[in-house]
Length: 139
Image 1 (cartoon, helix red, strand yellow):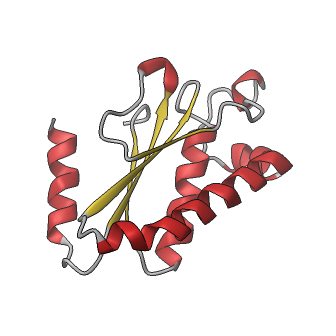
Image 2: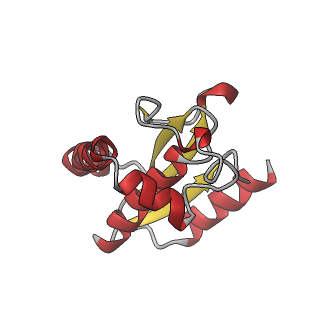
């Protein structure tokens, strides 16, 4: 509850010029976030969890990033999700919404979904979009 309050405070403290994108990573084994507007499932991608060297790491670590960036399907899926959000974001913005929650899920919420949230956040921040990141299973 405290974490959610802090996120809301963070959203409210930003000047109200446009939509805030809230990207959240999660593990399906702990359920889908109830506040998600969009849920993308990246479980079909190879799982770094099964590589003993990558298992203790997260999607923020260079070795996991390299693993996923060398997986063509991961790059393609990332581009598809990014394109989908870019295409439909203006419609949600016009609907006078203050934020849009995009949840990315993998099995445990540690590797693939974290990587996707980090990459998507970076992309949209570069587009001058207001972005908030939440890694449910890492926090």
